[in-house]
Length: 537
Image (cartoon, rainbow, N blue to C red; front, side, top):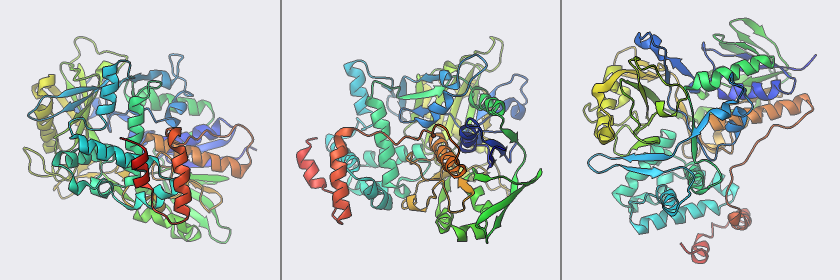
């Protein structure tokens, strides 16, 4: 009989484990608590929420794949679609990012592959904040060089232990510099900059910069349709064709641990008791805390760190418009929005167009990254507002930033907010059933590895240690691959190993990293002064 694996959770991480194992002949059964697959990546039939007869989708937030993503695009390239292509063939490049401001002109920055001198200047200037004084741009470059020339252990033990603003010495910088760093941090990780790890923010900032200036790969891509029908649904069909037994609406309620043997005996789902050779816990952080019994944490003390990990809110809404607007051929960053909004006009990228008589002609997808700062018209944070107040305040912030680009809230037919955001029982605000893991200062060493000390349990999720050090579809996919690798080794399954990539960094800095490894082993500080003298900025 082939070995059996039970996967708890049907988000990106769980689906990835199922994909890698089933394609190698392992018998997989997957249990998902909700009625859908994809986790935060799924899209939902918004018509059901708004009472429209025309079917269209809403999203937790728009999806995008920056250049440094490798695991997720590889998986997409192995998922066939109904049009005899793959999901990866449904990725399309964006060309610009709109930097939208209140009270001053907006600016569209090229993010496509640089081809002309102007493209190269835009690519270099935009990530380095081209409206900052030269001395502050130089300072930011020097700090990035510090990270590039740091060995991995210095990043884990030194850079992860300090905040991004402290590392940037932000108190001595201009107000514009501080605001830029704050907005960039929250837009990426839904976290106040003073609580974000310098390791995470510096690493991802560099990866985005490398993507901007590498002409050999697309800077960023998005799907050419809503996430579920374009990506998640074909993935489910492919997994079922591989023999994966998928149960949605079937939460696992208990993990029975046999302490004397140091193994999981079985798990309990609504469908009954489930026994397997291996088990994968591929659920969000807050669910993992609930499901992992104390006996398992005692058997593997490294799992106790998950109680110290934190989550924050990052969720979105869709504005359905009676007339489509382009804004820009990519994302819009609302630089002065107190709720740290980012948006994208999606219909321009979708391969289907609505009929001319359809009341919905445009879809503007918006993400709220700051739920704790008061708004403009409403002097309360989004978390303390009603759903109607959130809608009204977001429309205000959109109008103040995007009126010059053609946005008019009078043309908004309907707005749908991520259904995971719902009113609290006391009516004093909203709650979020799908919070996002965030990389706070010192959190890296508290994050568990995919392979645990329980010899038939592995973990998969965006909070698991990965080289993609940021909660995202990419890190969830990488974590799923690491879990699959551990299981294949335990079961001694022959065949091609699961591909796992490290983040690419320019090889020119490799000698400096080796030198810093030598210094770190001897307890010496980073040779930043020497590097600054030898590498002119």
